[in-house]
Amino acid sequence: MALFALACGSPVCAQAGKKKPAVVRADAAPDVVTYGRRDDVVAFARQAAETRGLDADWAIAQLAQARYQPSVAKLVMPPPAGVAKNWEAYRARFVEPQRIREGLRWWQANEAALARAEARWGVPPDVVAAIVGVETFYGRILGNHKVIDALATLAFDFPSGRSDRSSFYREELGAFLQWCSNEGRDPQGVKGSYAGAIGLPQFMPSSILKYAIDFDEDGRIDLDTHGADVVGSVAHYFAQFGWQRDLPTHYPVAPPGELRERAVLLAPDILPSFSPAQFTEHGAVLDEAGLAHSGPLALVELHNGDNAPSYVAGTRNFYVVTRYNWSSYYAMAVIELARAMRQMRPPPAAE
Image 1 (cartoon, rainbow, N blue to C red):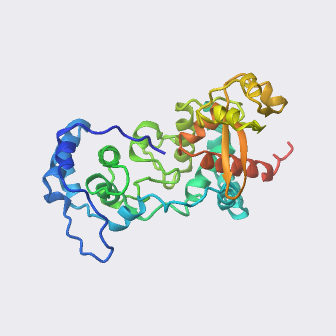
Image 2 (cartoon, rainbow, N blue to C red):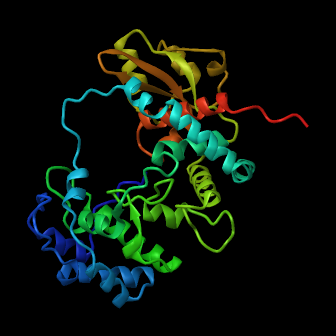
Image 3 (cartoon, rainbow, N blue to C red):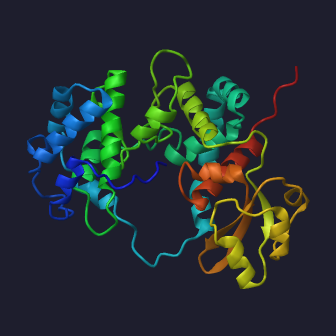
């Protein structure tokens, strides 16, 4: 969900850059890493404390308890090459009866907060509920990794074999310590995903600081158990990335028959860049609603393994969903789960 960080130019990063590339150790290997004894970690803690207004001794003490996790280093590695993308299979993982039923229950339990969020930011209840469903199955799959261990592993021992994102995880580790300090939380007790994402909406720590809100106004942001805070934080996140009230996420489209024309429309990827008229000029066929759309569109291609790809014309709101996770497959899964719940939700009782 979080943006890739730029390469860090700080003395801490420069010092870390002199180390030999980290390797993924076996799960059975003894835990020999005590991060508090490493000069680069202590330097990072001091710098983070100064930058973020933390107590340096507290930050150093917290990182001294962090441990390298081999499983985290393995999980962050890319999937094996050669696996074909398959939208139909991806959709089936998330748009299925049990998740729809759980989503309807969660929607009902948080109906007041969802209605309030829609009134304030224009994000529909079904979309907010679908985000929670795709991310954590409404709290069933929150992750069982100690967040401080996961972030320290990826910040200070990022595995070789893929592009180095250690600077990104250093920023997230600093944000995590800041959030814990702000909220009076014990950093050693917070659990999350292997990448450090937290709570029902799986916010990275920097996103918690920027976008999470105390929607139930109890003086605390709780993304694990407080449905109102989850609702408000997801809707606020979407609003900050430009969600437009009442704008569809996409329209049906038949792609251009000529590969060169199709390539032109696919070149910007999921960034809306073409008017409906330009879609037509390049040979794409929109329905009546799509032709009447007043903003830019993106031709979104979803591969289906050995079968023909699927296509939609994505709007700015489709692009906003991808800001949560930079994947058109993810965005369509959220949209399709939202649609399924909306269709199955009982109509309001007559007054």
